Length: 417
Image (cartoon, rainbow, N blue to C red; front, side, top):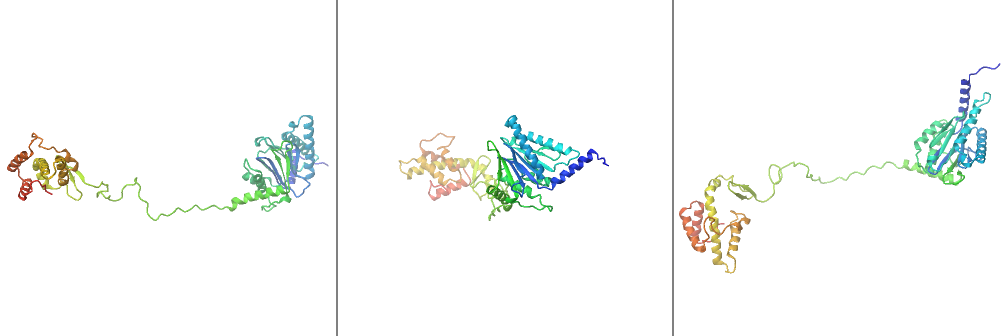
């Protein structure tokens, strides 16, 4: 007596049955690289292939029961040849073959009396550029999915896909893509989560070479496969072996660096006690009626009370005395210097050398030869004697005493030092 089973339960049982059968197989990967599409799968057999060619630029990869996906492979080759013969070779595409596989597997899966195929297949087509590449994944129940870039299927597909996603990048070379595929397949393990290194005898690999004009499918075997395995392992071992280099220590300076010009002064400068630098040399202080030269280390005119008291009274006499001294230098130069020399120039030079405490050196040339309030005398000796008599009758102070001392000494033309 037959038992009733709901369609939902029947489909769920078939799905679990096919999924468990595919999970017992080994995982496979298909991924893009710069020159085409790479397919890698573990396979201990050298004659029972999991990867095959379907048409000029289309390849086939499958996991699960060998007899079932081999029948699908043959049916796919027949479909592609008939389509290319009836229409055109360009009408044979990976999408058309994937749709045909999806219809076939969906029909088998939905039959009430039959069992589903325990297979999972991938159809890939290489294009003229990486943007035109196509990768399709077809499950045992007829589900089709487009997988851009890469796909992992069969066995522990989720774990392998996660590892492959971390290593995949656009524009990889063949060696880099092969290394990423090996690293992703090694994470599947054998029940304990450990990594298994695959050698040449345990691998089946093939590529769809974009550079080829007609039939692009080519298997990787022998020396070429060993070379790719060595290159991929060397490339993955180089970043791991190179440790982070420690940055070089900055050189220590024995002497402290000089403060910059932007930093404020931290102590008294060598020009004053308030920290403000002052230029060297004599400073000029403004008095009541003029400027005076003050040498460093001596008191200014405003600080000496006694000098300031008699400064106003003696200013007129000193002004007259400067002119008279200039006339004395002229007379003295006429008696002791040759006639061809210039007496005015000699008087100015002597005033520069001996009268430096009264006038600056650059002011001597500006002195007039006579008193500004009197006309110029043609006879210098007579004018000088007349002014000497008038000055002796009215002037007082240290200048008269100085003139008297000079007269007593007998040197009328000499200046005080």
